[in-house]
Length: 166
Ligand code: SF4
Image (cartoon, rainbow, N blue to C red; front, side):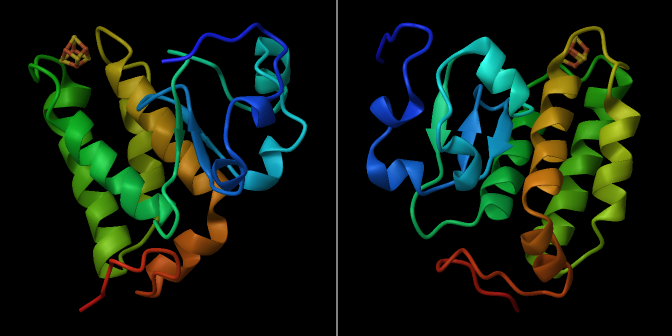
C-alpha cells in the first residue's frame, strides 16, 4: 500500500513498465484505461474523471506484461459473479449470464453484443452497487479494447501468450 498526495503524477506511482500496460483503475469494480491515457495523468479526481474513470477504492491494478485485458476481465467477472448472496435478480441471473457471455466471447469467439446487452440489463437493478460496478468493469473493457474484442470474436487472442484457442 502507498499513500500519495492528490495531484501526484501517475508516472511517479507506477513503474515505467507498468505505465506501458493497461491499467484497471479503482479496483475490481473499476475502469480500464489504455497506456496512451496514462501519460500525463495525475492522481486527481478531476483528471481521472476527464479520462472517463473514477479513483473508486483507490486501487491501481496494472495488467501484467503478456496478459490480455479481455482474459483478465473474464476471470474477474467469474469471481465477482460468485461474490453475492444472489438475493437480487441482477446477481442471481444477470452476473452469471454475464460471466458466461464473457467466457463465450473471450475463450470461444462468441459475440460481444450479448455482453453489452447484459451490462445494460443489470445496471441499477440491484439493492446495492455490486452489479453496477461489475457492469462498469465490463463496459470499460468493451470501450477501451475494441480491436481486442473484434479479434476475440474471430477466435484470436493477440495479447495473452498463455491463452490458446481450440
Ligand atoms: S445486488 Fe447487492 S444486495 Fe442484491 S444480491 Fe447483489 S450483492 Fe446482494
